[in-house]
Image (tube, rainbow, N blue to C red; front, side, top):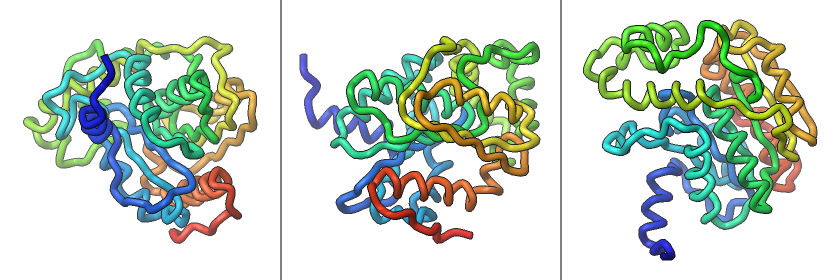
Length: 269
């Protein structure tokens, strides 16, 4: 039975958050959060991009958190990618740049594969803070199998959550089901070595990231038949918080290219 347009629109609004409306965009940027992350992590993005006046910037909100906290979180990364692709496929076609950090990098990769299979390949995939998708779990991983205290300690080690959340037991308890589901999704996922996209891939990584070495960030090269470039920044797993101006500059270049316009200079320094 076909989905009613009003219900489809409501579902789209649950999944995709737009913090700055753009009239007649020439390209679309979709941002995918890390494990335990939320769409508002990317709220500053459309206001910092020099290309924002011509780019629709969307941030994905996974189920099971914030205003979607009553929904069951999705603990299978391929199912998550399926759902996000279904939502994106209902939007008017625009040149598409996908940007994901940590777990979000792999979700973005799988969405890119689905876009390509549907005949609407992405213009570029930008992956951040994540090793290549064919690399399996390391010996110290398997966080979704550990207790809540161990997961909280890992988040604190990576500095991936605000101190307010980490110091508030009630907030952490509310966030834990989605966080555990995210860890399970990424830790039980592994792509085939020959899984590729045709769009270029840009890989970003911190030089002191305890989760991803520079060599592992380079592994993304094997997963595209298009171009590849690697940018290494000072910092750990969440290097992009401090290095966001440089990350914005890289995205501006790719978005201007996707929109078919000359490269713009970022308004952020």
